[in-house]
Length: 295
Image 1 (cartoon, rainbow, N blue to C red):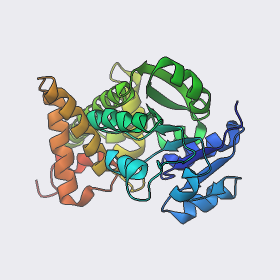
Image 2: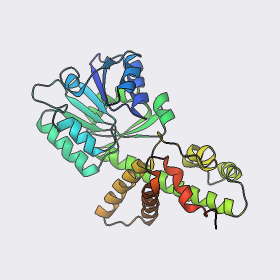
Image 3: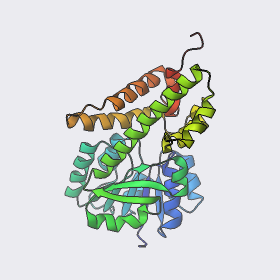
Image 4: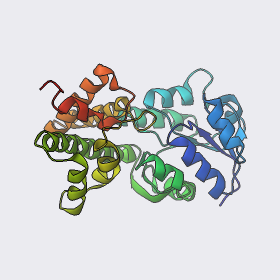
């Protein structure tokens, strides 16, 4: 691989593991910037260079972003004090966030006017997969740019797929999350119904794994979280899940499609956020489905 200097912005729940794998596997120096100084310090202890947006824009060639939404991506790239400045060193931006498709394409066009390449490369799977370097990464860009950046993406993902031009990676990732979130909604309903009918939730989860209802969603959330009624913070929270479903609904409505299953899941996530669960792991929607103790 090239010895180009790399940058990484956003080392949160997913980004920290991703950045660690990039650091240890790429053979390149990795400069890291984040508002969370403790996360940056942990990576610096592994050999990364603690930096800032100002530092990155003068020292790195390719920068990877793992941020909450397109709002932060746009601000980090082109906002006041952002990465892309005249005379700066950055030539390629890789957005590994899950971002709005039209705004992703608009940002790519703005960066192209400044001579900067852009890829959307959102990630799927769990925090454990981010730590293990086994993420699914769906990429949108031209073929030549994909081939140039794919070796670095493979440091973080076991499945790195070129999905088409800019924005295509986001479309595929958003559809992945739409199916996942809708499936977890169905699992939460099944567990609530089973419990109300006198069947243990953990038993149900185990049986579902053995039958035709088995799924990644079940194995990810079923026995460990839904069956235990345990929905911690610092996992994929309700607010983020709702954001992703709204992106899916936006794509659907722009195409004249009404996705009734996804709409129901989004409505339930919205109710959960309104009832104080915005930062809880999103399968917490189970608590809105189950009968109340007084029922």
